[in-house]
Length: 308
Image 1 (cartoon, rainbow, N blue to C red):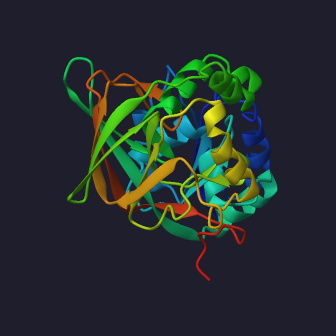
Image 2 (image 1 turned 60 degrees about the vertical axis):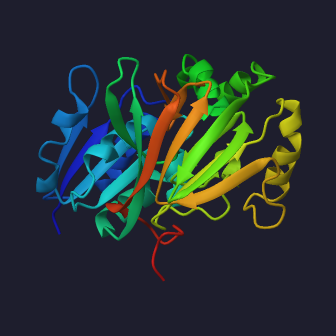
């Protein structure tokens, strides 16, 4: 059966950028129409997806930042979407759980089996006091994680995931802030070095940061990391290595909540990031909420999102 497929690709996405062409070769069949659009300064994301509903499949190829930006524009479009891992960390792809081989992804794309999944939405005031919003697919937050992302930004495309490690090591004593978290009618106040809001659970090396988090549960997960030094985080790191799923040892030094929406005040402001993209935030106040089941993500038989 012939298929119209739109592929949106970021050539500057990371070390696996060229693999999209292997995927296209594996996907192509007689009668197909495959439209490949390279986003960047010459083609804005909004223009690239303007006619997305006219296609049978959409493929989004890039790193987590690219994928988050494009998926935010494709919410509720109703077209099956395949995420192709072309970036540095590809955490969202890891959370979907599809087989990473280009040929396997091509097979999954043509089969078109989907799972409805959530996105998170981040809201904040910029340096001019104007309200801004953006969808996020993995983790947004303020504090230590934002510092790591900011310091790693210049080198992550050149040296890959190790850029995040070097960034963390260059911040041995993260700044402590006071977080006021208003979530679904409750208020909690904690001191910490970071407050993160998650739509997905898995970070590097298949470690589950939020043990009860799923990308299809209609909730966001909030985590506050207790005040400590980089060395002081070693018990949490050890627990994560020994118990990646987090059901046994849990996550020492991390307090977690689940909610549909939250307002978080950080005093003093520690900067912000979403899905590895640093954003300016001088107010120290941001909101987050779940956008439930707004994406139809293509899954294969290996994905833990696939219905039994």
